Image 1 (cartoon, rainbow, N blue to C red):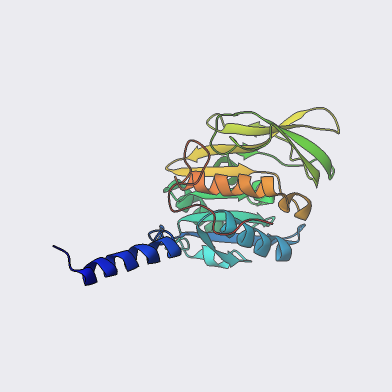
Image 2 (cartoon, rainbow, N blue to C red; image 1 turned 60 degrees about the vertical axis):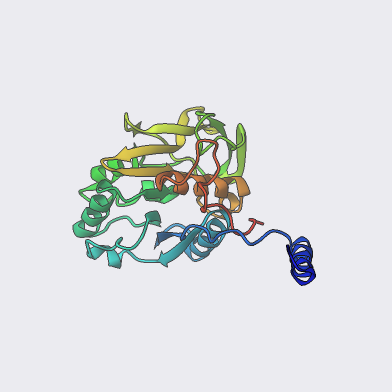
Length: 261
């Protein structure tokens, strides 16, 4: 039989539990480690780099290492210790070994994210076609900077499941699709306000053993400030890493830490 003293302890413990609420949740999964490359011309990367790394870290359990040059890509093991490589750069050219190392890392299975001018990068390199293949689309020029609206092409994709059916940017560069890899899976399309032609602006792609998420959206803060756009990038990154559920939510342990404002 329990003593009056033990009954008192049990009652005290129950009262404390009611006051304190449920026990803290178990420690979540370790954060994904993302290597974000920015730099080159034509864009305000000094603003975009910190903005994207900060906001995306609030939407998913991911930490970013930001690099503003491609110097580390001279090392073929530049991505060791990282779970995903994100390219948001606009260099017209680079040494062959830089492209070779980037391509080999993606082909070997490292998840890869291509943002905006990454699809136009290295246009003066003799290996440009190999880079375009890795991106999953060939594009050389863009329409003038102006507002436009997207159309969702795959409503069932976990990346765009909760993305608006029609989403508008107050201003961006519409990259013209010359050709897209047969294996690429288009997610968003835009009808050019300039000439009525249609261009794919977001897609997924399997580059050998590596998943690639690409979008040509995101020239500057007019698009990058959008919560819908940031969610699109976050979902694309999680998808590339295999951490996005079919219902469009992060896998357990990889959800948001702070709200995006």
